[in-house]
Image (cartoon, rainbow, N blue to C red; front, side, top):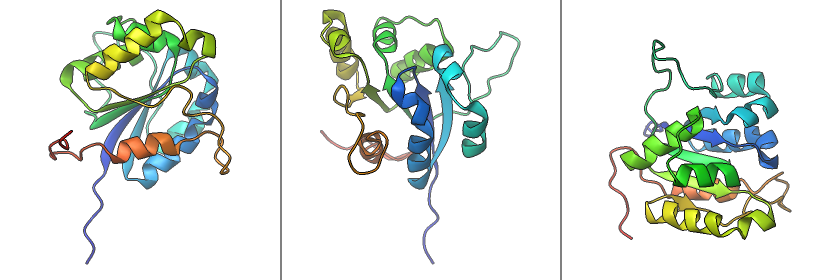
Length: 184
């Protein structure tokens, strides 16, 4: 008898950049790898997304706003987080600890808790050359964030709209719940 597949919980933080419009493809790929996906969108990305379709696909509403103090927490604890696409604005705010949205609150808290995080920056070439951006990427990497190369999600030639396999490959390397991280 085969062993049951363990489902892990993934927060997928979605920022407003072109790959966001096709994020359902990444959700489906993650689900094939036994991830239970909860989408947390930045406020701008939320306006770009087919939220009803994504809620039906994941079985969970797309979250985007901070809860009010009298509202209960609506998200179960995550095993890992993916930030896809990670924009210039989100990377810079996150690295400096700005906590002015639900997405940034989740990212800041996860970084402080040491949760496994994969981030795939997607920014204009001119913004990628900005000195603050590069310094912030190094800071996040120094604190354990696994970064894909900038623009790793460019359109692919193998039929994928964007190179989602870059993210799923990184997710495969994350430790499973209750498994110690691999030695460097």
